[in-house]
Length: 226
Length: 358
Image 1 (cartoon, rainbow over the protein chains, first blue to last red):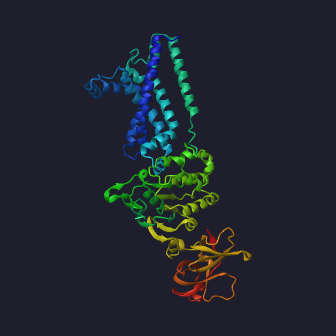
Image 2: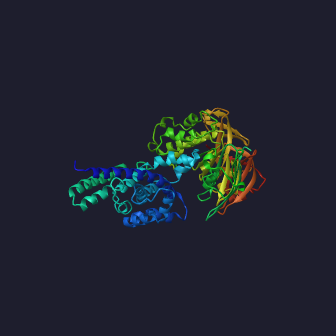
Image 3: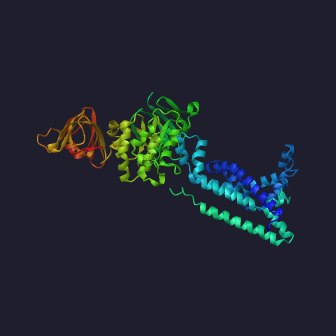
């Protein structure tokens, strides 16, 4: 085995982080995407732009602001301290919060597209068939948007696994707490352990390719042809 | 209290929907108008899919909207069935599950056999296990109608259910709609821009123009009102309810009776004596004579009184006739009207060249 215990720890931590972040993203991203798809509010443009910001912002910038905000003198830091949670930077929790924000557009946008593609007609049909809005969401929207949910989950998961800049700023490099795969590759390169770096990097390469392959074979949406 | 009262005021940038309607609580009411007349918007207001800022809506004694009290029953709590222009079946459910979707969510099912009845009425028993994308356009629309019926609605709302179909599919569905009309007790509001569908299905007619109701009343009455948009030009026609009263197979004729007298029709071999038929009589097929001609090849000559006249700019005259209480239209040339000296109140004879059975 070419992977040492530290490598395995980093892999496990990364998978744990990505799974948790994906679950949170689906819960948080779904209402945001629904609102963006259906609202006529004038705030829509602003919220859409805020959600999409991580797509274009350098991760270091995002990480820096999160670090400041969640630090002992930041607004969020004050709140978490007051709640007795301490401060979030350089903890696993801080990494989760940062990753959720960083990967949000990768979940919201496929969901928003899926909701927009469904349109309002199926919702109206469901209403005339006595289904309440919540009932309609679970029995009509979720099944019809399944490809969108799949894409959102895969992208959210994969993107969380691949991040580096935000982790570097917010998480640091603490084994089994914040040292994820990308950090571990960086460590190996820093210390000249190219063989180790190769193993992890090749693993990431294969994983990323497999994810995208999965994505492209699962879509296009079989129900879109109507 | 069994009827439908629908008063709405809903402004749009290009027109305002403004209605104050009292509609019967049974039979088919056609909401007729050209595109942009507001007929679909009116139906959507009744369904609650659109919320008119000022509205009062009461359906068979139950209040659905009253903006005075700030009361608006959401669509999913209204006991209605709605058929959209496109079938809009749920693509992820098979036909059976589409049919059961609304039924499972209906707390007040008056009719435990409703689902089987709807399936039978629309002839879709053989399609139950299919997915919607494996159905033809006509089959999809039949399933959509059955799905709306299966919830045992208090009122059935249909938004141009045939408009998206080609002529052949229309012909496939129309007989099922006629069956609905004959076999269901619930009122049906039927949006259409087709005079054919109006004459074939409706008992009551509401004509909308630019968001306003221009005509509303019983079908025969409204079809023959000379100011009604339907009583203009070549396609103007009347509908007569008649009863079959005899057959003459040797001449290939059948006889039917209505308030205005007895008419002869092409032989209706399949139709028993006593059966009620719906006839469409085009105004262009009705001519006028002052005396009952002793020798004429036209079989159907009946006494009538002229109750109205309207001249059009193309040298034609539309006459409204009364035949034993039944109204009829006659479209003749203005010259004939002048030569015969026709006037309101005159006793004449109407010669009916042809009738179409609906």
